[in-house]
Image (cartoon, rainbow, N blue to C red):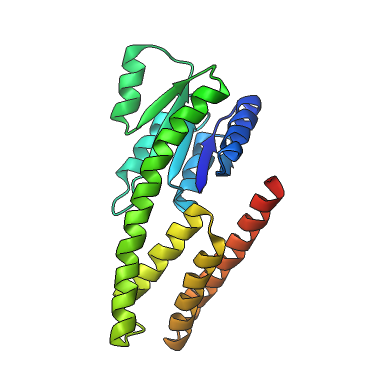
Length: 211
């Protein structure tokens, strides 16, 4: 499963990445708020860890922007901060954060907070996976291969498996989308989908090298 980690402090960034990898997360690393916002829009990870004070956008601002997106799965967002004032914590929660971790923190505390959130994320992904599988099965039984609803479900399934780090299944669903788009003559979609497969190949290699 992917986790976006954004912190402008190189030391804390390295610590957070190490902790995330210990929990079998695939880190997507940002060095400031603007980079974090860009990565989120491109990757849509289900877990987001944001330092509060960063150049560009603050963690709270990135959180607010994510929550303002419509028709999106809701990621779990944790703010990481050295701020202790009550009004600052309230601001974080009002921006849409689910939890916060105060610096300095130790590995056990970090892991306990992340594991608690991970259970809920995996449960949600499992429900979504079941729903989209039912749609795919329905269209397969009816002999339909190109409906918009089917393409949407194939796209959702590939995204879910990508988030979980199950790249073989993610590629399989993207490949089905490529076949449908090719038959429909949509060369632009074929190109985008092939780029998605290349991206997943790179992510899988990176994940394997990090182990």
